[in-house]
Length: 436
Image (cartoon, rainbow, N blue to C red; front, side, top):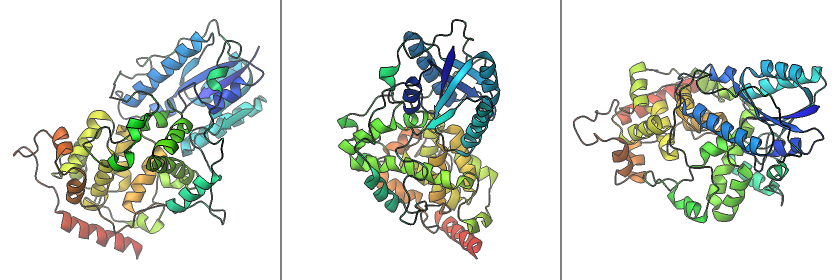
């Protein structure tokens, strides 16, 4: 019997899944697949990784739902090319469907898989799912990638159609009729099989928004101490346990500022697609010449939340303890590392990549380079946030600080490791020198 494979990646859900819906509408019955990719997992710095646990649990849920619908989900641990080579030996594949991923590694991986399948005359189709508009779908009037967010936002909104947020019928099609059961399917790998330990961090359930969640989002999103001021859905957007179409449809209805923030996701993914080199280098080439100080002891103090600047330290401790950080704190901690400590933004970006449960390369790269002033879209390089001013504006009662720094206000809390005024001037001098 010929089978169609649907390859889950950043879309760990059955509801409103573009590629899954397309696979289920084909002629051959569908076997969902997930690969715990060793090309990614082997590079993780710790075997206690909350993201791996989150993904593992989401995949187990998918496997149970698939079994409940009289199908079988294949879950493999290995390198994608090797997994597909084995699948081609074990099954008669009619087609492979998946959803697009725009990161540099994912693009190379998918090209390799498509080439392998083509040798066996198996079509490989990737569908747009994790964004509303991708690649070249929203461009400037001159046909180039927009480098100003305001112009992109305007063009994005103008490109919306009545069916842009329309739900895909994947849930309705996920039935015994369209799925295939493999009687002797290989056992799914456990976390221990893959060398990982279970490590959980708090995550808001994968539920759609309600009016109370976002009615005042435009007013509450920067309040550091207000745990309900943001949606906490970023982890679900990152791993696809919620549909971006459903969330954007809600945002359009409930709070336009939230829609603005979600459009940034499309924007940064578009920019990474057009400028993949920015994953490893500053877009603005003169700034590749910045003479960073890269002081290891100061970097360790930043990582551990003991710089003596309360908002910076509170943000880093929140990150280390929960795998998440409030967006306003992300901006302040990033600016402090780059400008006050004059440490290469790539060091901070990598630390966030290792720690954030909602880590998304395009968003992270885009925001770090924005803060540094080195990116495709960037704050002016000479803009340097004052951690003290940010604290006074966004946590005036020190509620956020005291929640994460129990020793704050005592002799146990460290003195500032730099003088902000002097550090600010040092950064301006270094950035000016790089531009000469």
